[in-house]
Amino acid sequence: MSAQAQMRAMLDQLMGTSRDGDRTRQRIKFSDERVCKSHLLNCCPHDILSGTRMDLGECLKVHDLALRADYEIASKQQDFFFELDAMDHLKSFIADCDRRTDIAKKRLADTQEEISAEVAAKAERVHELNEEIGKLLAKAEQLGAEGNVEESQKVMDEVEKTRICKREAEEIYRSSMPASSFQQQKLRVCEVCSAYLGLHDNDRRLADHFGGKLHLGFIEIREKLDELKRIVAEKQEKRNQDRMKRREERDREERDKMKRRSRSRDGRRHCSSSREHKRKTRSRSRDNRHHRSRDRSRDRSTKSKSSREKERTSRDRDRSRERTHKKRSYEFANGKSGEPSSEEPEAGEI
Image (cartoon, rainbow, N blue to C red; front, side, top):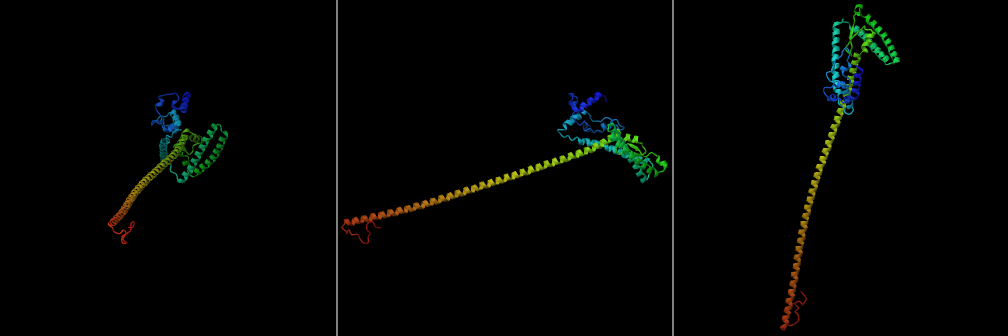
């Protein structure tokens, strides 16, 4: 890639699609289905394995560093949950790689000379030491390239110790097999990238493999897949907790609403009971007033009747007196004695 192209890619990655106001590039958004979500998360196998023996070619979905920059900016404000899409993508890729590894193992088992389980275990030990030497050499070279010479030398010391262990393991393995069989190249399939490894590969071959872009690329993909699984699990757990919290809040609101309804019904019943009590009280009050009025009317009637009786008695008494007086006056006028009879009452007597 030219320096100008590298500079453009860096600007795209830093500023996104709005870098130069290119409206053509703004027609597609990072959330579009056509955009590779693994690319947005910087873990697409097409990018990682580019230029290796297992170069996958161009991805079928859109790859654009500017869209990745747009996503990184937007994801600070909102969770798009693209990790799930990327996880499914990497799981499918790693599953294909593991199937190829199983097929290669089966092919080796069918083509290579059959050996006993004891001899196979000794050969496996040599393979393990070969891998360890290759990884240590790759690490030492990386440290040397970074200028960390002291740490690189420490790693090389470990390489020398592992080489001694390897020579001992090879002697044990050689002593358990005929010389003709030992010279046969024994192969093994790398569990990480499914490449073939030889039992008698030299250190340079091992260092090239374990420090190579293909093997390190598969390590990066597998580590990224493990990280995505962890992130997805955490986000799903958080979503479940939020969902449970919302459900609890809805249940609590529903309970509060039911309590308010219950209190409202109780209040209406209380008001109805109070109104009924007041109505009965008013009815009793009216009845009492009616009874009191009737009693007063009866008392007034009784009093009026008694008064009339008294008036009548008084009038009768007055009439009796008047008649007595008239009789006496008549008798006196006709010459009768003015002495009152002892049987007749004197004036003023009843």
